[in-house]
Image (cartoon, one colour):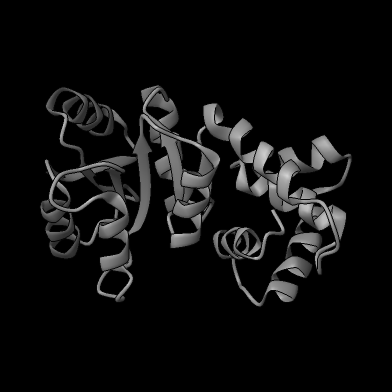
Length: 213
């Protein structure tokens, strides 16, 4: 972030009107700075490497390179940018694949501008993994389908990771489960240790990979 604390953002989307609306919302938000735009995946990758924004807001389906290919190309460590996907198509398998690949979140294109801007801030400033409210049911359906049977995570740890996967904050998870925020964090760190990871995004991806969520 710059000295003023703004989160620097690159937007990649091949639909001009939608991209312009995103650009305008980001420009108008006091906590965000639009530093670049791209109309296809290859140009988005170039902008990210050139400008090194904190967040890249990318359409999942773009010409030249799709969102997954851009994310994979950034996996070589050439940029510290967190990638937040936008898509008109969101099923549990696609959301799972995105998180497993290292995305910071997955938003529906039905999300309003305020939700998108808040998601950008959440992944940049808080390190959260964010899933759009309209896609959370698909995430929970997958959890219910795959969460049965023995695992190295306790039932409570899986519950809390499910909340994290849905983009909920620690305080919200605690309220829903009648636990203090400190207790939720303790369960999270136990899950990190069991999964061999050090942050929420990695824990969610690892748990999905092993069929624990």
